[in-house]
Image 1: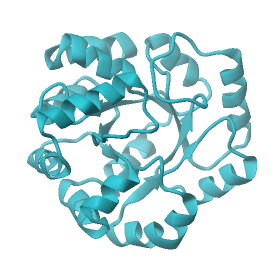
Image 2: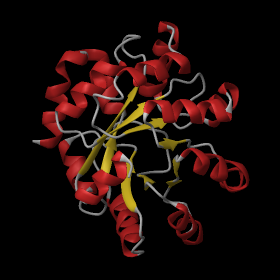
Image 3: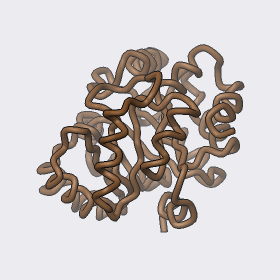
Amino acid sequence: MSKLKELFAKKDKNLCSVFFTSGFPNLNDTTSIIEKLGSNGVDFIEVGLPYSDPMADGPTIQHSSSVALTNGINLDIIFEQLKAIKDSNNTPLLLMGYLNQVLKYGDEKFCKQCVACGIDTVILPDLPMIEYETKYKALFAKYGISNVFLITPQTSEERIMKIDAMTEAFIYVVASASITGAKGEISEQQIAYFERIKSMNLKSKLIVGFGISSKETFNTVCQYVNGAIIGSAFVKFLGSKGVNKIDEFVEDILS
């Protein structure tokens, strides 16, 4: 059983995930960030693969990707960094990137490297479902990799049910039809959306992302779903406070 599935078997509510951009603020910060997040109680970690055109991301993560690429980060370096902590890290890790990165790197090579790093779950927001069904479903199954699908307030009930049937890890519930970015609060419209998804009684774990930036927003969404991913707020914190203060950020969310 994968680390993520083991986690979900033990914990069902208030799951806290944090996203960070590999190679930001500094090229070799990846392993330190993972170690500090895990040791401070984060349940699972979303490792971002810096990309020159991150279409789902807002200014904060776009900036971090630009800095990371300028620092010299690439997939080979990221995989080597992750391999270095494979045996010591107990926190489930996911990779979040874009399909073009996988295509350029090589589909099979990418999957082999994921396995070598102990990665069994990926998030590729721009992977079309038809492309997944005709090609990547079989490829990922060959290497024991699960794909995470995203839904938004505009996703039809029919598509949500189809995604639920194909999901092996969790469904990424995008909090609003927008790019990533820290928001001040959760709106009544978003709560109505979460309530609608909750009422569908899906079999999959539901994890909300986009706009979760504080203890208040985290606790609010966790009333309707299994957990939440905090991204832009953490990346912004890293840029200003640095890796050594990560414990303060996590404590503010989970205390």
